[in-house]
Image 1 (cartoon, chains in turn brown, orange):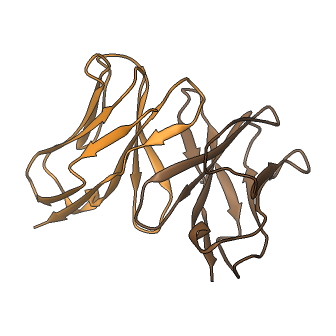
Image 2 (cartoon, one colour):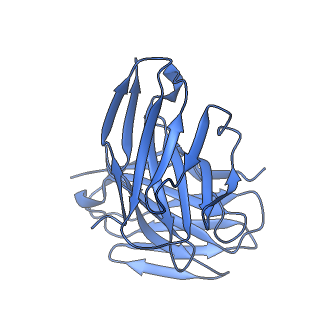
Image 3 (cartoon, helix red, strand yellow):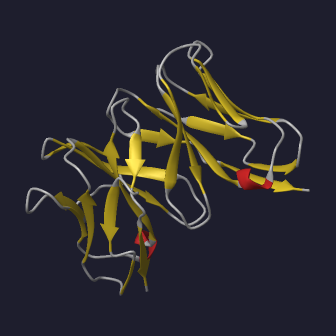
Length: 112
Length: 111
């Protein structure tokens, strides 16, 4: 059973369009993370969320990205104006007791 | 900048033989994580190593951590086809912060 669920599983969008990716925690946790993985490459950290605030972000997480917890439960990752190079798998993860991170099933984003 | 290097990046294994993959990292950390990823799937947590000398075993996989050498190893005993996947190691600078991943080691087991 996934620790978090993500929707949609696959999103196709045109370059320049805005996309919103969603992460739904199964249970109440404080630490959440977004990562991306370009096909065949390593997993890259984007941003972390602790107690409803951004706690850390990477150089990749520039002004075109934003994260929110609009309803106190779901997390969203918004990409304002997608580029071809944003095509990747986007994973949401939640923190565990030993600081390991449990990853959701991912959203495959394809930008055409 | 924290860097994590894995080697080899690809490993073709024969069933029944033993292999080791290595994970080096560039800064002090007492925590190291191993994940498995099957093609097109998410990352599955395999091991959490939380101190120098930590050793964890699950089935044919055994992971160890040497924080002084900044090295973790993942040892595979008597490889079987089910172990074919990509294995990632990851390190965080501080507990609860971003995981920095290696490039992954893709294992392929053949009979």
